[in-house]
Image (tube, rainbow, N blue to C red):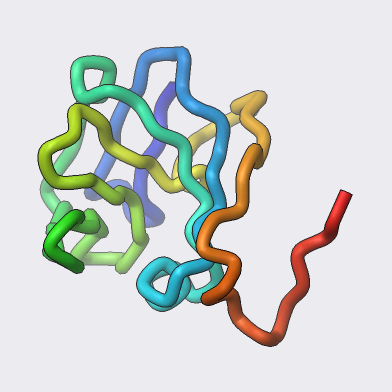
Length: 119
């Protein structure tokens, strides 16, 4: 599967299978994404950057860093410290993905301007 930022200065490939999507509603994820963070995940050995000219990293906490394009501002990655995986913004993937949201996390921090449907 391929993906990238809006301007093309960050491009990547990820080999299947990718984890289905987790939507995180914590304050950091809401601020970095502008709403909530919806991401898939893959082990590092199945992930490759094919263009990284625009890639910038921000150490957002003691446990994770966030990758984004320094040119167009696209939020692309969330990478937990000490784990062998990278989370990839689901919206940065190209083409049909067949992925589904399987979980909503940190609902206690979600914005008051939206509701999460209950089954």
